[in-house]
Length: 91
Image (tube, rainbow, N blue to C red):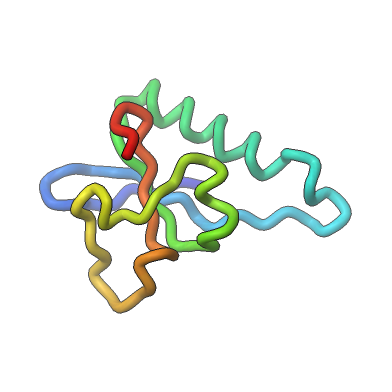
């Protein structure tokens, strides 16, 4: 699930943390859902998505620390867990 948020003057999407039932994990379901979400977001014209989640899982989908894009969270959170994805701008 993606929801809208504002980063500066830009409207971006926020990816809700994913959860896949244990018996279906490690089969690519979560990654497929994220990739499909990114594809739809791109078609709708969204440049970024951000997520607050596992620093071990979301980088596999292309997320990097949001601070790499100059994005800071409005609350205290470890930098490695607040991440951003941008298809057009790779770090």
